[in-house]
Image 1 (cartoon, rainbow, N blue to C red):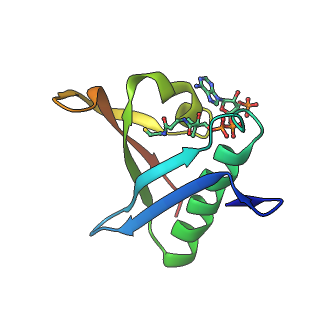
Image 2: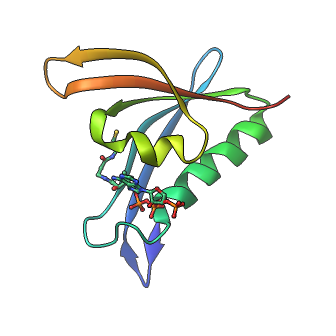
Length: 96
Ligand SMILES: CC(C)(COP(=O)(O)OP(=O)(O)OC[C@H]1O[C@@H](n2cnc3c(N)ncnc32)[C@H](O)[C@@H]1OP(=O)(O)O)[C@@H](O)C(=O)NCCC(=O)NCCS
């Protein structure tokens, strides 16, 4: 994602058996809270709809929970990752 020729956000999504998985979503520091993250999530939702996928999944660190919940994601599993620390799987189910 670019703003005035500068990269401000990245998104990596992968098609899995029953879901579209967000393997990376990040907005450049200094550009947070301007709506870029939400735009990337909305893009992912429209991609899932276009591909007929009813679930979006991701792994997140503890601090970003409100960001994802704001767009309807629910925590389905919490665990401790040796590298990332307290983490969780979150999923969004899309209506058929
Ligand atoms: C988490 C992240 C992607 C949010 O991106 P952003 O562009 O700042 O988010 P937006 O401006 O689109 O915010 C969307 C909504 O989430 C809320 N929000 C964003 N970050 C939040 C946070 N850390 N805590 C609570 N709410 C947050 C905003 O207030 C906004 O709410 P609103 O729609 O009611 O106004 C960004 O902070 C980031 O890249 N962080 C570092 C990398 C990272 O943690 N990536 C995720 C890996 S799990």
